[in-house]
Length: 445
Ligand SMILES: Nc1nc2c(ncn2[C@@H]2O[C@H](COP(=O)(O)OP(=O)(O)OP(=O)(O)O)[C@@H](O)[C@H]2O)c(=O)[nH]1
Ligand SMILES: [Mg+2]
Image (cartoon, rainbow, N blue to C red; front, side, top):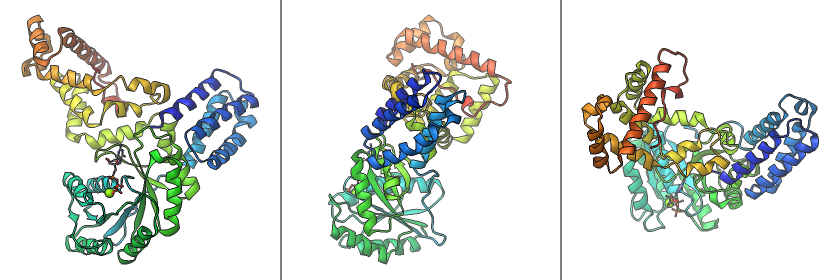
């Protein structure tokens, strides 16, 4: 996410750090680099100017320059202002006090509306809600089928009715939700190539007959400032309540995410970070600023771990780690858990210091390492996993053959495992570890 921007900002701050004492001129020079980085990232020029004015006013003050760590003072100010740029506090998708909550997803062709509809249904289901999808894109031939396929995976029911127009479909969706006792109606609407009058009039009519509690504009982060223009045009005609920014996993430059709030006043409420159904996150300005500055996003990572882990498994595992009574079988279970967090490259992106320059490294860790470790573990017998000390030369050779790896690979794994156990023994009894401390990462193979 925003690798180029993050890399540039990190370089700038590194130069600042290497200077020790800072003069006003040093800070101004650094801020010129920040300006360039933001402009290259396609952030709206007016937003950039106002942002830097605010940062500069605070950063060249004597209290910053004469502090013991002026570089950190400057970085903190940039971070603060970035958070403000992104909207300060997270804004949620509101639920109606009197259900069903009606949520419209609107936007241009290919922005990600249909995908977001299914992702949002999944997220709401995980929160204990009962969503219903309405396939109101009757223009693109395969649109209804696409939504149904995604909805089946959630799973969540879809309202469709051949021959009905979008306005009638929205109304039918509302009626069906009452009949089926669903508390959220998510309406997937048709996209257009450009903002056009027919579409806007139709959406207005839908809203008149089945009023929206949330009308979310879905925009593609890769389209940069165009996304901002689209948002302005939609906002003129429709009561938008927020933005869903998609494709933040791609090599978007950051311009759309960093400008849309300032230019349109619309809050980003959700973000899409991949093609899979679980790749939808609540947008959090504070965490996003940290990610942009390469400071990582440990909080999101912990939340993901907690959401994807079976609590009982996690506790049992933690108990074993605490007692240093940990076998290769447990190790295998742990790898399963880590895999649920998503591809390793994505996990690494959320670790501090992994943005920018370090981002190159993340291309080198891939999930093949994990797959190899798993293959080796699967080729062992249950007894071998429970008592790795019985792994002699001939057993290791058999395991290597069985897993399509080499004896060296097997040796390395056993050695890494021994080392992990050693660490666990050292940790044994130590209290007050962080939650992440209970989740040591397996070797990458
Ligand atoms: N990488 C990535 N791809 C996404 C994301 N969201 C959507 N996509 C992909 O973008 C393409 C278009 O998504 P759709 O959900 O069909 O977009 P739409 O707005 O419904 O498009 P129309 O119905 O044609 O207007 C699909 O191939 C999706 O898989 C995302 O967050 N990341
Ligand atoms: Mg669609």
